[in-house]
Image 1: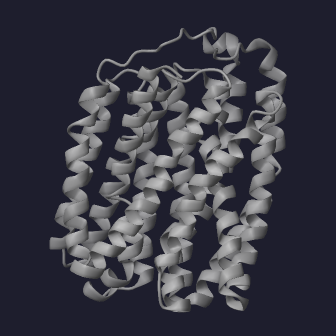
Image 2 (image 1 turned 90 degrees about the horizontal axis):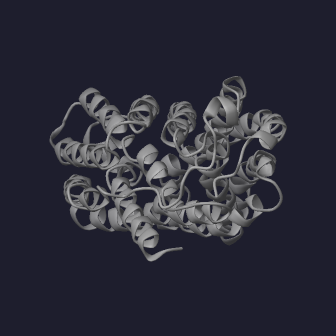
Image 3 (image 1 turned 30 degrees about the vertical axis):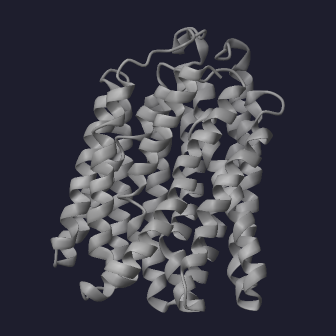
Length: 400
């Protein structure tokens, strides 16, 4: 990879990790917020659902804007505004207002991903794109882990309000500096696809995008259940939430280890590989809490494997799999649509999880069991998506 391309990916990695400062601090702050605002997990589950609903809408809107508007402007505007919201939330005393503002934050957070995928496509091409996107996607897994460790530490010594203030300030800083360095990024290679109606008929592109979107919705829902409620579950089950960092840390490793599976054979095999990983995820979701109750070490081992598979699969579901059909020109829009559907799944899972968590640790197990069934039901869609892509592959020139 050229040095210029590497520099772009590093800047994008840092910027997107910074976005997580004002997104992933909520899960580790939930126990404190529940007490401080005199609210419940059920009510805050609504806040989580609203966040991902707004995030979902924003991904489509900003994905469409990304086909025309300056990408660096979108990433700057979203990050700066999200940072300001985070700094304001500690002053809120009403659970209802907190929920509304967290929902608004969801929309602001959506400015980043579609633009990031398109900017990355300017410097990634061919089979290297799969690995490149995998490394770049560690920004929301390894970055997630770093944010959790930092936020848990900060909450422990200064409280959740200070955490929200500091995290918001850090995001505002990176969002006003890094995008300025991405202003003049242009494609390093030419798009070799023809117009989309020649490369892949609109009918097939729409069907394929819908299928991949549903798959991502199920995958993201599973990840969001773990992200949002795992710290609280571990706090109740073992008295400490610090081991929850296994989730994003192993997820980062999984992104790199799982990526080669998507480079074997034709690109049309991608959805089949993803479907197999969804089925494996369903099994491990069911197994994890039961293993953890019997033996903590075994439970954490299962969690690590589960994390690697969930994150590794999702890294491709939001990048190489949709881009295989859309090409570079529409990559921000299609990535936005797919990630939007994933956020709807996260919203549903967040609401279900919030209601189940009213029962405590037992409710967390119930929520995972429900989502395991969802994943099993969704798995066959990967076979259909692969078949559609294979049928049209002869008329699509790969992005070289």
